[in-house]
Length: 225
Image 1 (cartoon, rainbow, N blue to C red):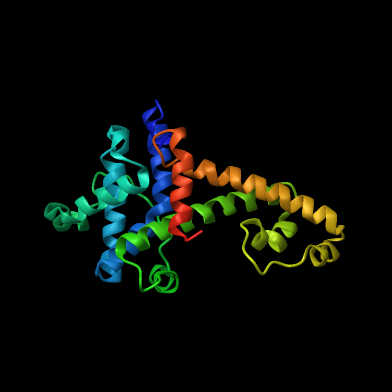
Image 2 (cartoon, rainbow, N blue to C red; image 1 turned 135 degrees about the horizontal axis):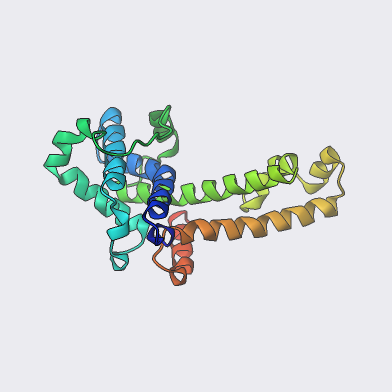
């Protein structure tokens, strides 16, 4: 959200498009849990995102209305309740920018990653939190590959976020020709960088840097951590 308020309109649009590319799946999951059929949920989500981009939605948004996470869902609700949007979504590409979302297998992903006991809003927030984590880890993986540490990252990634079940450091070292201590040091640095990237991703979705800590706490509460 900080980034979407860039002074240059094209920079703001690019920032918003990046956020939409990242966080479209929580919207799809919310629509599915509301009872929309897979094809309709996909169509509505795609149409909504194009609506935001085509109408330069976010540069005019009021930061006081809330975090991007909450604002996006509130706007999606409004979009779905608008009968005109429903009637014209098949024509959504006319005069609007194109946007290619990675939708193959989306319903299978929804079925696999969406606990049945969660309400639509709970599912949306859970998917949002997990998407933040996945995005930060993806960036970390790209950085590791860039400095020749892709193999190390692959072996220790389960340990970076605190998940259990990762390989013992001694085993990682044996496979990579490193000492156990060197592996431990590398994991410590990766964890530190992961936390930085996680906070950076959060910072893109809040109105000010002062809100980052509160949003981090909220997302961990959503995940039960």
